[in-house]
Length: 255
Image 1 (cartoon, rainbow, N blue to C red):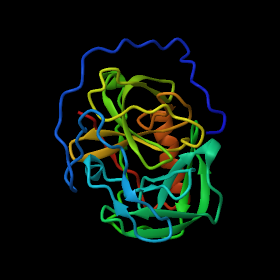
Image 2: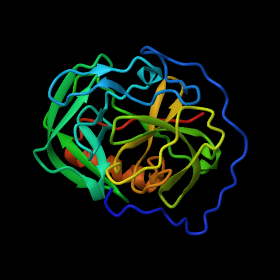
Image 3: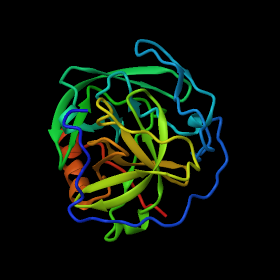
Image 4: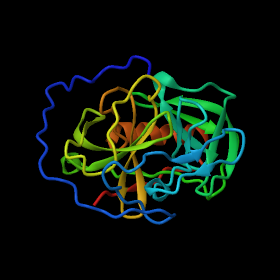
């Protein structure tokens, strides 16, 4: 991760309270649920960017990662069938290939053809053609005047090695969201993010949806642009429209 460092929170201090509710394990393609403590974090049993891959059979099968391109550590995440977001400080280049695998492990590849910077550490890029509908385009959180209700919520955090972890939201402010490790170890594993994890996405679970909440800018428990922030979200909308206005982002209100 270039320029990796912990964010200084400009006076933002949050005291977390309460715990996580227990959830079952999804081993198939059902709605996403949190894993038990220390459940294996791997998304793939075996991964090959050049052909179809084998998905892991554990809880991660319930987390639809078909819209995340893991063939490069500069991870790209679908927000429409033709638009991806990346970390601005760790982005791919025009003409690069992005590879996605659906929930059955079937591969599809596209080329990056255009880039528009958005607010903060976000760049929106255009694929040469849309991906099929079975590859997930992730909604963003609906803008809220008071995002403090999300403090303490669990988030699904991904990394460059194609693994998923469970952290907690520690604070939201000034267009950024920061996480902390779950000291109770109630679900899955925690991860100290390192160089190369930049741009990997994090998700909130909202019913049957995975909602894109952040892409990594810093290390430790992780922090980055908050996609429910009005300025960040407006800039992403504008970038999507500039690149291909026939597609629009979706938003989901987090209960």
